[in-house]
Image (cartoon, rainbow, N blue to C red):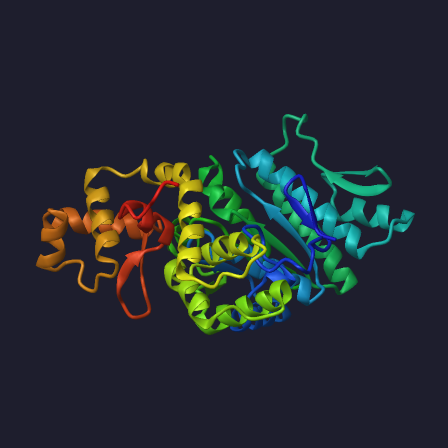
Length: 392
């Protein structure tokens, strides 16, 4: 089973296969579609090609990586860098991830201990609760955590090469690296290992598309052009409908009316997180949803329950940004945000509106659809802004 140990995921998820909707990492029965993206990532892993998965928040980036890694039954560790505040804390997390991977590919023998000592010369090799553990002694004043990261990752590559075993290190919430003082040095350290690695492959992901693009698309950043990119879009309606009806058959031994399934997808706008949120609440009921009023009532409950979070999401926005966001919410879809009609609607000059739009786009409040319309990323936030809430 998969479980998290100090930010490092190992094993296989424990999850009832009767569950079809989740607000956490989707896996097996809760995972919907992503067939092309899964094949893309599997091919990259097979070729040893480093990958960054980019999408707005709550689109299923972590779910995609973990689902693929479970399907290929590969050797991997997931390291969550959320709230990593220093190079030392990142180095500690990497050391734990390296320990997880070593335990998967090497037996616990005296020969193994000698091999680890040769490959991780500056690290401490110990046995904790009967398991090998690799640590860094930061008590020594001369130790540089960035140098230690290079040693850990290089040692891991050496072990994998000796075993002829391809391994994957999945670094999630990777954008938090930008908040660390030695961010550039850490990126350079990762690149120094990654660009030479034959058996160690990296997958990067995170909840801030803007910050990830800065890391991987900015010519001035050390990791520029290191990775192949998988850009996640919203899952198609047909795939969601099939998933919903399969779940309905399991729950009620019957499919829900087609117009109910369509209405669920219409009001959630195919946003993966909100499709799961709404369906999870609907499936909690004993009775199948058969009326629009039932679906709308539960969607309204979602809005009431998430009101504080939505308010917190709006707090960073100044007056001009709120005016523009309100305009997109009220108009639903905007084809020409530079048009006189839109500028009159939001009451701003072209320059002020463009500045606000750029910020909202960079921080995933709005996005451009494949049809080239601009609209809010978050359908529940749109419902909140437009005042479509009834307190019951």
